[in-house]
Length: 462
Image (tube, helix red, strand yellow):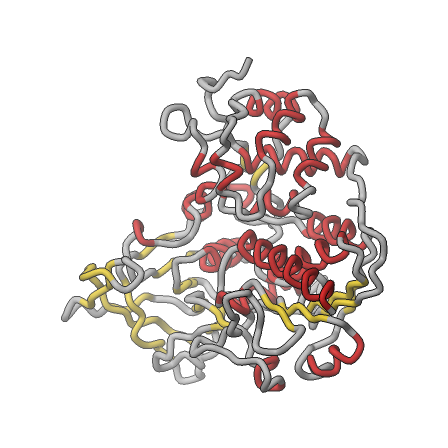
């Protein structure tokens, strides 16, 4: 019988004093006993709200029921019927907003720890050799190009391969994974996990090519000569900057550059690697999202005396996952709320010497319902920092849109889609951050899966 009143197991983490100086994974995998005990809390609801609120439709009660019987291989196969990235989603999906946030046990006993169970299932299946290549339909003779190798393109490529199409993924960088690899630190998502999940997609017959910058080395019009359809999932790799005076000083990074140097190019291993990175004694990170938390926690691991996150609203409005904020605090990151940066103080050599700010109070709600920050007159002060990381958002790189006039974009620079999810160019579909401007891995995957369904119908008609 289920035991829903048993205490929820939150999962174990590395000690903050140890982990703040290395890039080892913070969250530790459940033991078998912990996983079975947590799985036993699941009620196997007839109308599972957890599953209904999963953007990629993972059959949550079904996989947990198999896990209860210690059928790990069958459990991971059940997950992979709708999501081919279980080890990734188990780590980086905001379960508190989707499945766990809608668990019927949430208010009384605490939600089932679905994220940790998914991760346990995927990791254990991988280590024990229980993963099976998903079955693909007979070849259709149709060819599809997927631009980018982030979560949206990977999800689309996998579903298209399932349908029997010949799929090629084009990646601009030298390694696959997109934002999974360059944006998310290894202490949250180990590189071997990304590699293995991509190998699963490769095993379905999907081909991957690096060093192809679509819009420069290849145009979409050129791809359409060789492929029957194109999926654009190239993400949002262009940083949003503050525009304040002094932002071009030495010691100011965008979060995109900083995280790419650290995560993709492994600057934290310099001089073992070729990429150096300069980190000062006192670091300020501007922003309150997950990228800001990743930047702050990466910066802390590079050995400064202090790392401060400066956010213009209060803690209640901060969009980052609560667990990531808590982990950052445990690792010594300081938070300055209700602060607006006004100017980078620059020394006579052009280096960052401080950050002028003002204090805020919260005013009326904005169009998204969040209360606007209003500057308090006479509240100016200077944060004594020598490194600044700007993590206030990102937008799509305009290279594809600029070289493909048939593709219309909105005033936010994202690709325009019609009610059926099509771009303004026949045979070209899109999803992920290039249509959202910045979202979660799970929503990017959802876009890729849904677009694959539309492409299947398009190819059937073609």
